[in-house]
Amino acid sequence: MQINQTEIKDLKAVITLTLEPADYQEEVNKQLKQVRQKAQIPGFRPGMVPAGLVKKMYGKGILADALNKLVGENLQKHIEDNKLQILGDPLPNDELTPAIDMDTQDTFTFAFDIAVAPEFDAKLSAKDKLTEYAIEVTDEMVDNQVKSYSERFGEYEQAEEVAEGDIVKGLCKEVGGEIVKEGAILNPAYMKQKTQQKKFYGAKKGETVTFNPAKAYENETEISSMLGINKEQVKDLKNDFTFEIQEITRHTAAKIDKELFTKVFGADAPKDEAAFRAKVKAEIEANMAEDSKYKFGLDAKEAIMKKMEKLAFPEDFLKRWVLATNDKMTQEELDKDFPKMLEELKWHLAKDQLMKEYKVDVQKEDVEAYAKEIAKMQFMQYGLMHVDDQYLAQYAQDILKQENQLRGIVERVAENKIYDALKGVAKIEKKAISHEEFGKLFA
Image 1 (tube, one colour):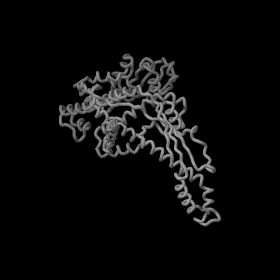
Image 2 (tube, helix red, strand yellow; image 1 turned 180 degrees about the vertical axis):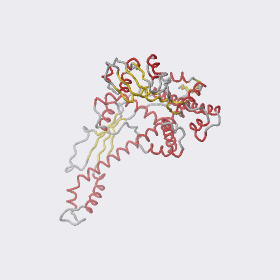
Image 3 (tube, one colour; image 1 turned 120 degrees about the vertical axis):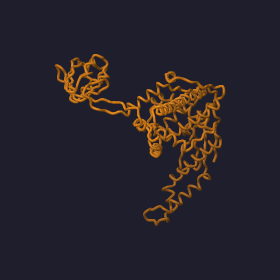
Image 4 (cartoon, helix red, strand yellow; image 1 turned 45 degrees about the horizontal axis):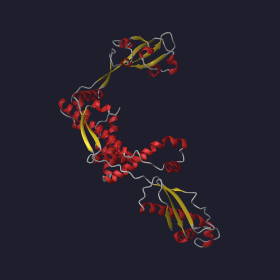
């Protein structure tokens, strides 16, 4: 077999493979023999079909399979042996690949276009400055979180008189109109006009309040939802409505006591309020540390990508490769999305280089631990603050069974390890910052 490669020019080259009978004949004969032994052709006993007939019937297909296999294996071997960092996959070069006639040819030539990555250095050094933020946790933040827990674990109860924050349910009728809504629900606290709010406050169960929805609410969606009408009907709605109060539901925050401590922290609940606040503060500090870590990763990625921004790529080849491997993508979609694709390619190349430079290795344990954190956050969204580790591990395994989730988690773990490695390479400035100022960094 002859393999030739043109000189790499503008990050592109052509690899040509020429196969002769000595390269493929042994494999073809082996396959023909196996087919002959299994072939069931009327008029012949199994294994006794003439070799010439088998070759006539199956020879071209077997030869095509053998050629494809040899070309694929040797093309890949050439790329590996020559340490070519190719972009995408080799693409057939129809112009340099002669037409094939299996009836008359015994020598076959195949040509492939390849593109290689440009030379670059994405590594950071002591000349690169990054900031690691320490977000201050204030007493006010602890107060707010304690209040949030108190409200989250509070209870709903029925009341006799409307107070601020209460949810009111009843019969709503248009004055001088036809709109009637049974079981209408509203919360006066959400009304934009104070005058309309005050009409409800102090009203008792069974009483009727007259108010104007158009004045009470800011947008059509709120009114259409409350009255059960469409937005077109809301546009011309000016009339007052009567509201006969049938139910008043009040939410009462939980007391800050041992019962709340247990609901929030489970078996590890603190014994008194001071210890509870201390644990809440530690919890906030842990969350702030994660936010700081996230910001550090964003800044580190930006610094790395700055080193990649002037790189030139063989864009014509890459666009051709994307279209060849994604038959659902149109040229218009490709032109729109290509700049983003190019940035993702740069980041992929940079990550590969940095993983080798810093000897980053993603282990199974790392992936499972990250999946457990995702599971923990998902449970917390539903108010389940302290799920048993056994269930977290089981849920994490379910997450990892999803291919897209697994791929994304592996990438996140690798990136985080790269960012951690950079802390020992770049110049790191540690800076204390308030939560408010930290938030402004994302503006």
